Image (cartoon, rainbow, N blue to C red; front, side, top):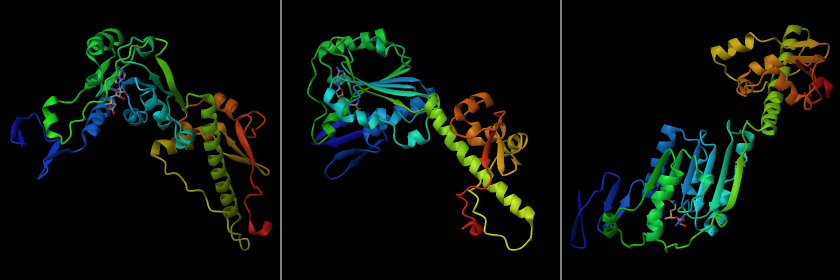
Length: 330
Ligand code: SAM
């Protein structure tokens, strides 16, 4: 494709991802170039599911923020020579509140190192993917010469993505500000400091697992308790006017396999005013089943949060609780 501007004719390698806007002849990329670069990395992560990913020259951590949502990634590292950028952007990498309520299945640690890509650091060994997005053009000639030896020779990750601006495009931009100020520091291993690190809640962590388990269990127990009340009232039949039962919590829709698993587990039962739900029954429900616990582990995790039957095989609750607010009790 040829693009003409300022009376100069360029033989260009431009592709479909850009659009020329007349009359200013400002080149607009659709989607913007940075998004295309990040998308390239995201597609790679989708395809290869790396566990350990490092972004060299991570700048304001935008790419790291996009990558932290991938369930396959368990270690995410950003390295940059600009400590201030790391300091001011690190907090974007903290887990959101929602990530405590619905934790990841696998651990994730995100760490930012202040340092130079051309320093050998053993903490960056064994990575599945290293990205260097718009970084190498910021290296001076000495660093540029060391870059391949350090990244390909020493770090030798499973995959590496390097992007750098295409000189052919430069005259097409209204202002030529593709380069930041050069960084020409030499950093010792000691100067290669950790600036920020965060660990995500995941079901691998006992306290998170317990939090999720007890939460899901209480919801399920309450649902079953209300259903039991309703069944008993229906059994009582038309013996006089019945008070309005509290509404059932919205019931989940189960697949056939889930339904079969639930039905083949021990049924809840009443002992006087006590309602007993076998742990195996609770474990059959999808939200608890997904935690992949056996009965023993579940019992240990919930023992100090709920009341268990004497043999420890069931959760025991009062069939009627003061929360029910039946009209005749008011
Ligand atoms: N990769 C990010 C992105 O695509 O948005 C930021 C790119 S920015 C143009 C270049 C980054 O490389 C800057 O944050 C700069 O501080 C960093 N940088 C420059 N020289 C570096 C070096 N020797 N080692 C690590 N980072 C470096």
